[in-house]
Image 1 (tube, rainbow, N blue to C red):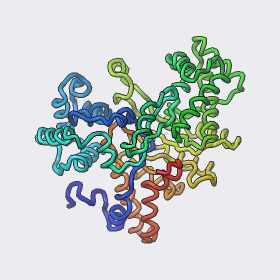
Image 2 (spheres, helix red, strand yellow):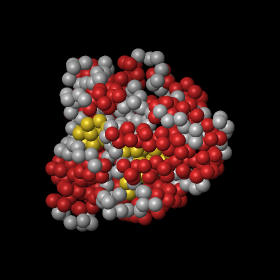
Image 3 (spheres, rainbow, N blue to C red):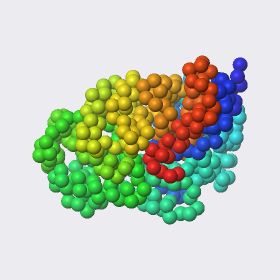
Image 4 (cartoon, rainbow, N blue to C red):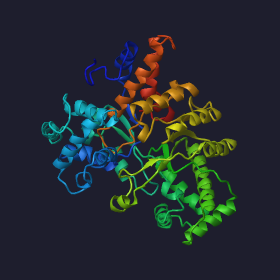
Length: 468
């Protein structure tokens, strides 16, 4: 029996161990998609206790605690930080097979040097150890980033954002990590939302363009795209309920936008036509600037309306949507390809059943501009489990070229989540090592080491043009 989470954690064969320890483990990190607040990097935030770091906004943990029957006061309510930490510690031992169990202990070991097991009985010991370290002055945000060997971070930013903290970070010679914005224009896309008109007014103010029709909206967005590009942005991201493709004439979409701006409700068909037109415009804008377009889809959000009313979005009440998006994705990419305006694109579905359809869509639209121009994104959200990663990479390997994969991201709001890259690399090395030891690929360690280093870091650096 192997020891719990020893140095060969998740590495089941000698090839996997060699690949991880001699190639993957030492590679730095590019976190090209996350929800980190750049203000906290600019101000080098410190944390008063481990609950702030772990439970402050982590809806993964919140869901697990709710599933363990924990009262909401100990999750998002007014219980003390120490009480909340206790409830998490008591929940964790029951989470066998859940990546939260692994992530928690990876973080305790890497950042706090704790080799034990967190549970209700050890909670006081861990609480004191972590808080002493957090309050020592040696574990502020930038210390954590440096200890994780993170070279570059892409945050998630709205087109109306001032990017003031990105400017502050760029001007600070003491900050060693590069922090770039990533363009997230969902509020300009979601014409059906009650907040759409007020958002367009805000966009008009920030861009200094009066937005009265489709043409002026495109001008305003181009103003902001140019500003983001000047600030180093090289990636966009779209959070889509599903991938829409419903083409319409320019005049028809213009009339739909004017209707919405007048405060009238748009129909479902009109919503799809507007979204299609705007996404096509943005896709062309990304291609022109050499950006990467990321499409995240497949979530049904805020299902518990009573809790949504109390806590708002992103609080742990979302689930997987099984809607088929293959036809819409293919049609959307094709419409850009016909115009020679298809940007580098990464596709993520929250539904793991979409792995094969995405893997085959990739092969329809590849280009010679860069290896793996169209990518399947890493196992996302509910899928960034051990099995989810294995399934995603196995499907990608079966249907595309795994060696060109751009690898892992955290998609997290926590600065301790960089251990997810280590988790991913161990799973990657074990998967490849297993194929080699099964005689399915030659034991050419030079080629294999280069491959895992590419997937861990080099492919991402080249694909986005980061020069990290």
